[in-house]
Image (cartoon, rainbow, N blue to C red; front, side, top):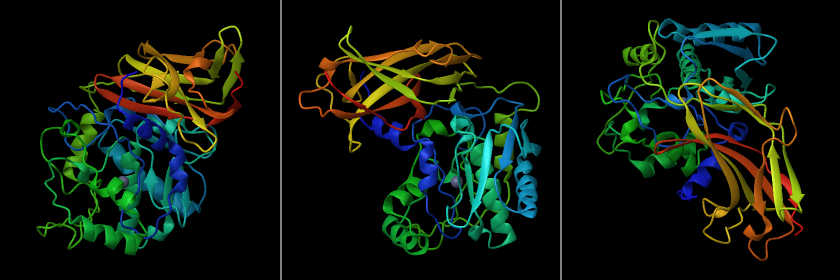
Length: 394
Ligand SMILES: [Zn+2]
């Protein structure tokens, strides 16, 4: 499997598990978990940065549950989030029981962050998909902005300052030290949240929108040429146009991509297979397909007990991103709801022979199930499981 080695990092680090590990302070901005892949964009359509692989269906009702907090806060969040309904054919219905697509958790330390679009569908029903940090609710304007911004991500929008056509000349060392001091952000946090620059294909070929509510403020001294961006405390005209193009109220979305998501991943059985002299793995999940047809790589990658991926022993079929692993790729039609190892416990197998593990591989091994969508040159992370421990006894 010829892929860039960085894809492994991508697949294992952008997981939704990360949402729990964010520790943030006051309201500079959100620390949203976003896809890091490049993305081919239709340059004639909406402006602004969006991940079209993670958009909801046009016209969809998205169920939102606020998991905690006072009634007053819940009502406020609902009112602000529903602002987006004015501009696109999308409906946010707030529920207090039953299943939900988006779940909001309020705390006083977790920062503001959200999963992007339909990634939320892959998260367990008892787990948040948006965190709102009430310590950032320092003024009505900040509060409004934080909530609307996070719901912007939840509908598929990306940070506007990642635009490759913004021309922002960051004064990087200064920004690192400022955000370390005021937010406790590491260099990596700053790189991920501010300096990331998407491929030109992510834009719509029109203009960069410094007024977007998805743009962070740029403070004095943060750029080498004095460029600054104010707090954007309202949905800009560009944001409205973007939402209208992504979720058109009449007609269909102009450009469709495969929009797939994994649900109901429970576990992966890992069993020795003496007949075939290797390990059979049976991940249990459902996959829902929408948009267009697309190809998904269902992958198992192997790690030692310290979480380090085991290097592949050769450059053969069992080399995934340079590591010992196995995969099956399937091209899936649109509008399917498929299951693996649900109806029968062993109807979808991944297999790796013992010979694919290099000499000296320890007995205590872990396997992760990873699903990645491939569309043209794009690789989009769909799922990355927790590791499953097993004994490698040949
Ligand atoms: Zn954000």
